Length: 220
Image (cartoon, rainbow, N blue to C red; front, top):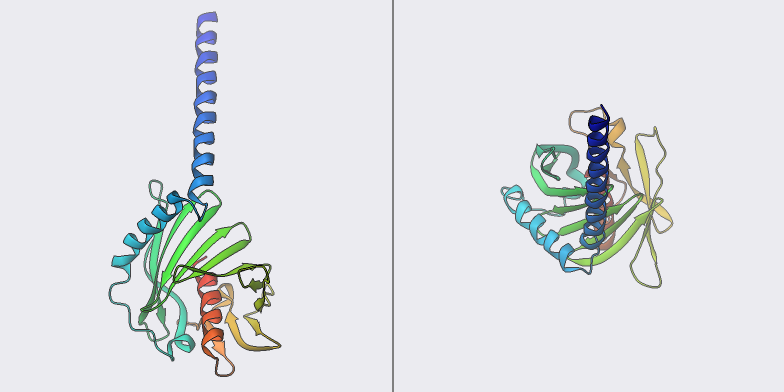
């Protein structure tokens, strides 16, 4: 009995040690992999781009009308599983046309999403409640607590999303007005819910901001 107790003690001690080592390795790898300036992070993006390439096949060309037609619907989805941290799919218009492809890699509480139209590539790097956004591999903004701030020392406010739980629409403030409202995915009821509603014509910068925040919300 004493020998069995000693054996179990050694076994549990060894298991605890191995678990600790694995945790430290995973934590260290995570810190390296999620550093945007590291080679590991750039390799991760290259890997995501290679996985996104086949998902992007057959996308309909993005034009000026697509923003108002973008839906919340996702098709051809592949969920992440026990042995793969990747998920992917396509986002369609209200007419079932695939116009956005995306792929996401998750690691613990952090994840990176690549979303691509026929002409634009967005990178969403999520850490907790904060999302860093890149557009065509250049810093675009930081989204936190409903505010989208431009990169750099000035941190110019690009937009503010007024999220109110339970409301079907979230007003998107661009300057002093809210020319766009984003649909709340949790309150969508129609078969082809629009991702956003345009209340006036947007300029090019406003369109990009609205698309970025719509995709940030849809691909969560």
